[in-house]
Image (cartoon, rainbow over all chains, first blue to last red; front, side, top):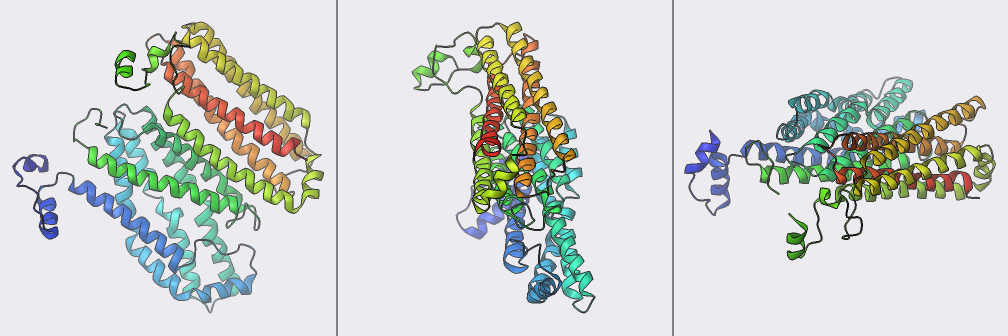
Length: 259
Length: 207
């Protein structure tokens, strides 16, 4: 067991490579740190692909006519293919994020049902969260010779899925929120439990993007996209930092975690 | 940690349950500080909504003014009074719990809860009247904001009612009775009230 092995571990060496080897052999939290770094790597890559490569964020205009949409696919042809190719390769990394969040709930003084529910719900979150969009827009980019009506349809489908389908996140966030608020082991702070309400409400707000094609409630609007994205960004940074602190505080016991 | 130890350590912290019966003893932040952090974040989010609303409004003031006149101000005023009275009940509840008058505190939080139900009931009646008159989410930009802001607020009221339910649960048994939880619930409920006053002013009053 790693917990036993660490008892006999030699002192931490000074060289970078030696330190990595030491951690690989003796660090009892190695798996947790791998999951955490995988999560950080994934979210950074997600940002680079969706903002820099595919130009899906910030979203293009929902009110564009058919020729303009076809032109958008042509303009972003390479970015869409390469960017979403990367996403198809690394989308499994979302499992590391879900596992770590599930772990946080397993460490709490609550029923295991919370962690299992969360992991079960979030195991399909990548689909509405990014994969449906990636598939629709990749198909559009790879078949430029098809009927523009179809390309137009794929464009709508891609962005409506990306911005507007948040039910899974809503329930998952709710489960985590309840877990944090009733936990007595102080694994995560109560303010984060309350912050889940903010993220949860944004999942309702995005529903407006199905109704409106322009204005603040459309899929690129100030309310449905920009404010929601800002809330999500704050929420994401908060839980990434808090999970890092949780790993540092982890004692592999089952009582309250030290501050 | 006792109050004496806390003071000796230079802190102003007092265990929540020690606050009961000490309404004027020390200065402290009511409820969990975590809830105040949340209130701050919510205030920022709603401020962003309100600023967006005002920016849209100044671009077409005629439309907003014309649309505003289709709202039932009476219902808006009634809802404002309902939430204000409800908030007052909650403030009284906190005070009663501090004085260990738990039966009174329980009645007061239940009154606040009932008024919450009344608020939502009245809102549903108002929405159905408006939809009946053909005033829907997509009728124009003003009504989009109207339904959006009031619906998001109703969601907060529903969450608030859960918090009040927790306060009821706490007050019912001598084994639970955490003053901190009661104050935390009250803090959330006051925020819901405060947000409604802002929404009422923006949608119904401002000309």
